Image (cartoon, rainbow over all chains, first blue to last red; front, side):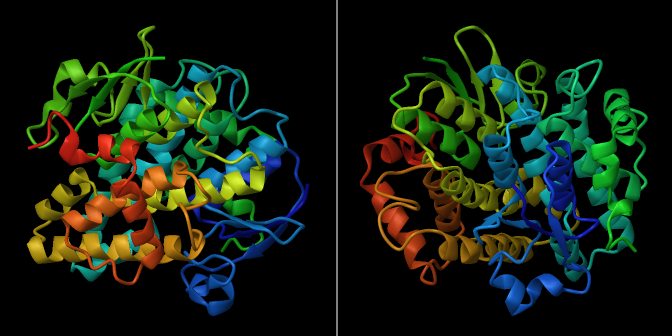
Length: 210
Length: 210
């Protein structure tokens, strides 16, 4: 497999897909879409993704896949090695639950569109910072209780929960959150910092990083 | 299979799981958790779900599954008939993308916790109503372009995208949104209104409905 990833270095959702592609050893082209400059709103990008967000992943056939949770499941189904999910259905559900806490209940509430909407309602920088910290802390409190006490989130190798968690940790650090209450999450951060797929996918190592 | 669903009649996420259980003919017990009265915050419920949200689905073995996207994938893996996803990986990714637009980028931004956070920032009823309408309209504009022109979202039978869409339509109606711009979405609404699994799962037919 190969493909084209429409990405932005600091997008947590694109970051997830970059990690999965690196873990599975799938080569791809990157096309940077500068979200702060509004490049996602151009008609030519809306033709690729009507939702005007990143990531989008274009297959060599021309088919375009949207939404990181869907892209990640596609990669798992079509390039199963190394697996991002365990084999047992209950174990898979536990991994996917942590992914969903981050992917549904932390990340979207802090994305640039929502923060801009808050600012448009007259909320200042302190209120926005408190908003971000509050949603990350609520989610991380649950994640900390649900992931394992050693190794990666759910076992000896990185998987889907780690793929969601590591970009969210990046965002938490960017907004200067105190992660001291989350020793398990900090353990995953340290593991990722030493893993070549995670470092290759990191925002600061992308061609469009500023 | 059987199980116990921790649910609230008006929770969109619990509504999704009720639809899937009805479609697959899985019998279950309902335990109502009254979100407006704060029953989800009680220690005995936090022991079931550390995130203090509904739904949670307890298997007869005692195992507890959290987060509706994870529960739905579990049900699909363990009770595959009728299927909620097509067989082809690209087709599956397209269904899951619509589910994720609703599950990540509409619903969580309008849930009761976020709306209460907006109110705590001093936003009044009009601002909250505009907030809700704006996120539903942004998401529905993309969904309208991504689903099919006839039948259910992606084919002759209801599937995962319909399971996410119908509760979101319910929420849009509750907040009195104008759905005239979305004829495809209104078509799904009409199909669901005539389908026994969807009517059995509807908020107004739950034992805890008020």
